[in-house]
Image (cartoon, rainbow, N blue to C red):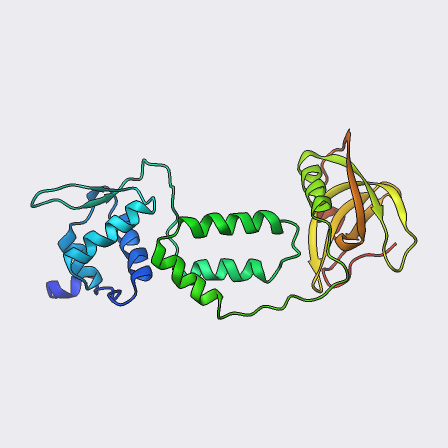
Length: 249
């Protein structure tokens, strides 16, 4: 039995009262339409708004960097230009807020500085109304990060990150509270890990000829050398280690 035509048409998206969500829905509709595009009338009916509102929303998205092409005339409409480089990512207010809050909850992560810069760029690229919505939501969430000794040195993190990428041996000055200090320890940085609210540098220690977890907040200095090392699979090095129990010497 053939279904009524009305049942073959997707249900309208009720976005009339929430502009950030409506902008996101509009972008998704144009992306799914591909090169066919959509007319103002179709989008207005789909989103439950007027054609004038659709035109204002399209203008706002274009100003935010979304590559939407417009054509005039009775059959005119809008097409999302897939050939243009993506200068804007379509995210809802909740998705952006999740990113902001998640990064705020881990201020001592190895890439905290870069994460802060990335969030700043993301917020600047948002339409004004969406940015205001995110700021309002973030202001309603309070975060008290866990306390773990003194903060890790940002320069130490940067040195270890570059050395792990370039496979360079690093000299560590390591001063844990429960072990003798060891200046100039030779290590091959492999990555980072978090356990029980604390960040560690994962490395192959040449002094002990084994994989070690070095507390980032116990590393007082790190100097990359010109010597390189053969890459190791961090999963093989720490195959018998669990995140709940960092290995000890």
